[in-house]
Image (tube, rainbow over the protein chains, first blue to last red):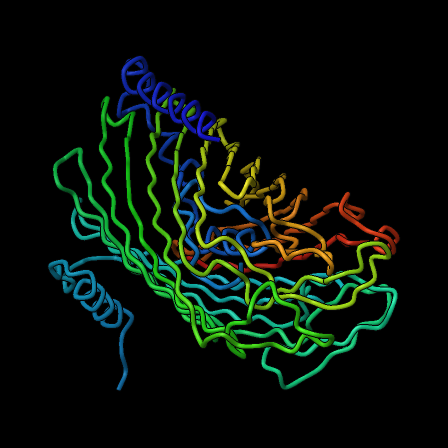
Length: 77
Length: 418
């Protein structure tokens, strides 16, 4: 369990470092953000729809969070 | 007295700022609000749980570097929920958690508690503040109350833009306190109750705490492609047991139910997860793919894959097909029942949500632009969950019973944003 955690954490750190340093040449100029600026490309989405889905899966499954905090917020699980 | 939308929003903003301890911005100016509302109906098959949920979220910005977010949710839950006992070849009688009602279960049927009902009110407020042109801070408060559960918490985080805003690093912390006041009191766990599940109460309320840490990165890879990678760590402590779930105490040879015990779970849990997401924009359409791997010290591992497609339709409308696959392993203390002759294990739960199962979701959303900048949407989702009908720990007559009947639910939702 601990070994797996260490391996996954190390992978996360390496990937993050790679994305920050190695990928600094990636990306676009501000005037090329036309497609990225569309609502459908937002990573946040509709907060009400996300809350409905998170609550439903949280109350039926043993996992939660990932994109946001795992938390709890209700006694449904 | 009539209150305009602007004056109500201004009062809300000032109240939220006071709550968050931030300076109240000047709201008499031109701040505009983005409001998302929705209603959701969740209905499980076989007359099980029904949930009706209303939610509203509002967001406004003050200048370029201050954003206020508010959200409120109200829901009601009714219906029948599995109480954890296994089907039996004989009729079974249970006492409801309040002790006021008894319900009978026919031979071979999954014991469902039909007295389950609750309502919940939850609210949250968040404030985002620019610190420098590249660094932002955020903080939030949230609270939730229902008949037997009260929770409140706070969170905060920082995000840093790098590489011409093509890279964003973020990290945050959250703490939540929960108070559980089980209907009929906290049951004495892992001790036989006698037929009928007469509860012996050991107290009126219990508490728990959940501390979360989240760190991640988002990276724009090209004009069409962006990705996100998160790692989260969550530590829960306190009363993590479900006070309404029991296990059948069965004969070691025949598997016949003789008695019952209330479940008990460990009083701490450490969860970790890695979440990866990829979004790709075609000229009109967008594809959104995500994967989450979660693991914890209860030996539950889960994989979640979600695929969503934004299909541009005529008249400024969007169709969003949705697919989700979820699979999890069982908690190490999950079991179908306990054997009466044995010493009782320290921890045991027959809650299907801690068992091994797969779940599938298929959904479709239609949304269209309405008057001015409003958006209306309707969404349907079908959810199905399938576990081990005949697990390895089944004994005697249990081998002929369906110990994990397939569960399914239909979700219908309406949205309106303006």
